[in-house]
Amino acid sequence: MLDIKKIRQEPDLIKELLSYRNLEFINVIDQILEVDEKWRKKLSEKETLEAERNKLSKLVGQKKAKGEDAEEELKQLNTIKDNLKEISELEPIFSEEQKKLLLELPNTPSSCTPRGKDEEDNKFILEWGEKREFDFTPLEHHEIGDKLKVFDFERGVKLAKSRFTVMAGIAAKLERALMNFMLDKASENGHQEFNLPVINNSESLYGTGQFPKFKEDVFKLENEDLYLIPTAEVPLTNLFRDEIIPEESLPLRLTAFTPCFRSEAGSAGRDTRGIIRQHQFNKVELVTICKAEDAEAEHERLTLNAESILQALNLPYRKVQLCSGDLGFSATRCYDLEVWFPSQNRYREISSCSWFSDFQARRAQIRFKRPNPQNPKKSKNELLHTINGSGLAIGRTLAAIMENYQNENGSFEIPEVLTPYLHEKLAQTA
Image 1 (cartoon, rainbow, N blue to C red):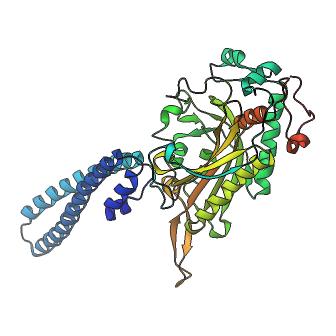
Image 2 (cartoon, rainbow, N blue to C red):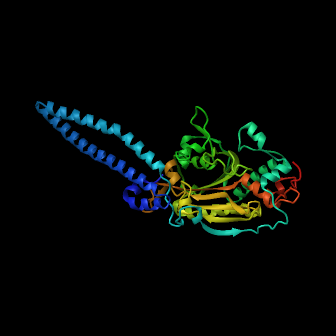
Image 3 (cartoon, one colour):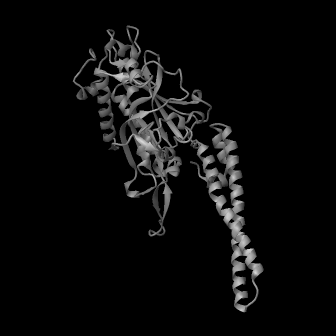
């Protein structure tokens, strides 16, 4: 959530920054300022009425002490009391209206985020790894899965509906191996591992910015204020909601493996074949919570952690920085890591590593006490910065391995780094 104080103080700057995303947000800023002005006028009126009330109360006391009639002053006091009550009742209405509008606004892009409209304006950073030259036509991952009988899309539909997949044999084992490998890599890189609830309340989803904008993309439990998480970013970040973290504990570097659930509303017809876009998928998430002055370096560090997994698996990938028009709702800066899919002859996103500034922390009230160098006894609560990224999306990693390591007979090799986690050297059988 954006800071209402900054919107009041620098409305033109906030409008300019949000216009790099979409011009429609300028109208929301105007609405927020209009509501804010109305409420501030009411607050000014309240202060005037309270001053008048105090003056009249004193006068009534003086008149009564002298035995004089104070009926007129008492009538005026009753009128003031009614007016103050009316203003008091308006406060939650104005507050809720302002909050609702603020929740509609995305984060402002950072000064180092490229300006642009869409993915065509994203900035290329690097390309890593050598793309394999095949002496046969490479199959798509789902075709390999069909040959090995390790993907069962029909039974996924029978158990749930489309975009749920049953995995068997080497595919299931490789998913488990990737989970353990990614968690081990995250731990090596200083991230503390957590085991988390995959059902969270709405407050948690508001805290990280999934609600209200992406509410239709989340599966809800009937008759409960509970939802299946779309990513472990939600519970990992909200572990510290409404808390003041000791400065000496910072930065917090966290990781978790969870299944993730997305209804994929509005994505009909996109990636319907294979396991690229599923309603349920597994992911290892990386989260960092830190002070503002450390955030840019921590963002780079977390992104390198995700890259190190792709490098260890020897999967060709590229890194791009998203432009302002392609940024996620809560992000101020973001790198996308895109892994190579030879069957499609293109890169596909496998991790988004985002820096959110204090946008999520303001929603979730995640703070620390900033010491006062002039007076150690005095300190000020300050919002922290949050960063997160996939490290990695396991299903997409599995698909990339199947395609990049495939053999002409429809089997595929196992990356060497994963052999300690598996008994199979080749995925010859289901």
